Length: 505
Image (cartoon, rainbow, N blue to C red; front, side):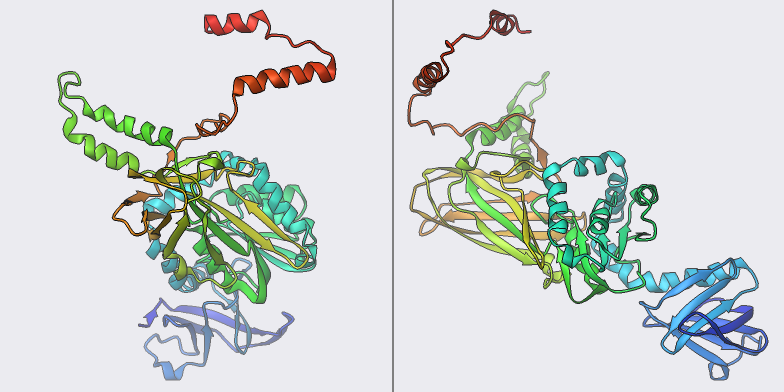
């Protein structure tokens, strides 16, 4: 349906060459009638100021499309690049110019805006962009050394993919990835950022004297435009369990700006899923729910809420880290190729699971972590969040089941893991796992938007039952070996240490 905007009178029109030089002017003043036709935005110019003139009497019609380049010039002029050339529209005042600019902007953002708004609750989006607008949150990510240094190495190890190229940084944040692209010799970098951190990123660009190279574009990638196609898109769009926050969809959406054959950094994503045994974690969650077992809490019977409490606690994915020896089988890997995948592929992710149990134990749930690969022309670099690697701000994630099962070495487990996208920029996680050939199965549905952050900064403890020799005897043997090798007699801890332990200080 076509929607007409208010017409503008007293308009003057000039035609420009491809070099921006004046080619000619229309005689006299014109009346401009803008018309949003959904598929295009029509600019009709009339020589007659009468607003009732039929469309057929239009002196000139210019079509503006979603990807057409438009630009404000000075306070009262507006440039439009169209299929047949370039026009410069002169208005009587700034108010008219702003009105047309707003109408065209609304048209160009319209469908793209719906892509984001249709999949995102307004309250969720507001909280999300507010969160990433804080310098403290940007600092938290930047100080993740394993993350930041791996990105820099991926870029600088593949300078041929950046040198002299046009780069797009999606969700630029502080702009750190844009700076890495500049270090690798990029010709131009466009950094798209929707949160208020964009103004701080721009300050960093100017402070580092890179304003001619790095251009910050405020707004959502689904809504903004940039003046040219790019050779490579770089981003850090991963969330917990790879997919949380649904930023990956925005990353894939950005491919509308990518030249044919262009690269994505990261290029591939692998989600690892493995069964685990951790009775301590299971009992910790169950003990929280057991608070509601009390039949006289200050004289009040709470027991009717115990089942609801169990459901709530077990509905939370647990964000922490663990020793890989708690895993009962080799992980199943679900891969996504960011250069080939589409946004809709991430709306519902259905992953079949099959395992051969490698050690007997009690299965308490499924553990998740991810790797991403930067496949460059010169080198492939992996960023891994595996529990065997240095800890990152993504940690690992574990999803418990309410009813653990005993599994034995050699048994085959099968099941499914479904990630169903929701409008809270997250996923509902449905897991099912069982012993093949039996009726023994466990299921759970979890809310990835509401995780339990369990990591306390303490060293990861080895799982119980893995000592095959006496730890005490091993200690004394090692002490005797040290004395023999160094000639230094073994000494007990200072007395102050024992005193402090006994006194509690």
